[in-house]
Image (cartoon, rainbow, N blue to C red; front, side, top):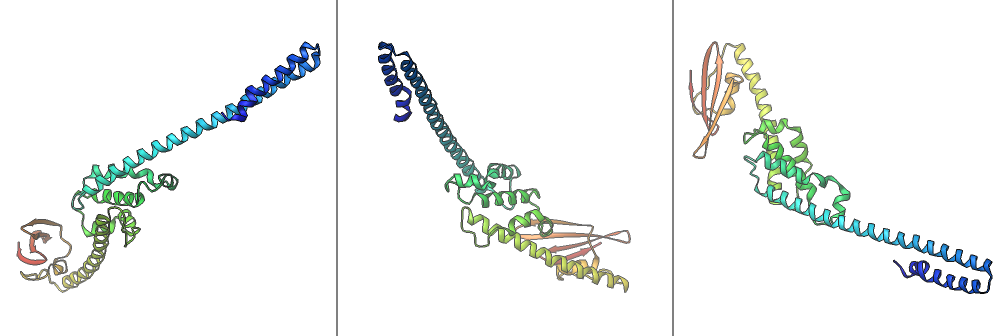
Length: 269
């Protein structure tokens, strides 16, 4: 309570009551009543002002405590999320961990909240975007193809909004991740164009009564032009080599085309 409020609440009423007592002894009851009323009024005003000051101080203290607690809580969530994101592996990210990172960083969308943290959680919005992108990747359980990337509009939207020259927190993970997703999308576009051309070639070959014509040593890119779209493709990796088995059905027969690192190694029926 301020000195002014204290004077209004105690000092002034006491002085007025002393004056009132003096008039009372002189049997001047009218002036006595006047100064008693003044003492009560001034004391009431002092009490109201003092209460207002204490209420304001209490609210300020409460707000300050809330801000401090909130900052500590958000900083803790931020640090937990950074730790999780550091440990995520792009080739097979843990879905639960990715979702947890998104949950921990979700509130950092709020610009007002970020301002109140005074830089305690740098690049939180970027980390949230990265967490959301990794959560999308995790949905493919380690089997995300170029075509999957091209068809995942949410993933592409997040990644394309990431600055190419980002140099903030976890830049050593985010920048290569962005480049890889962009490259996979571009590769998917090229694959789609090649598939379109191969489909046209295959249709032209069929119209001429031709089917197949693939031999060991040919490029994998020519397979669909010769046989059309496969019913399935089995992929395996070992000793640093990528092997595929294309399975086609033609006139009731199964045709198998094997490749290793993009080159046809065998064709069997």
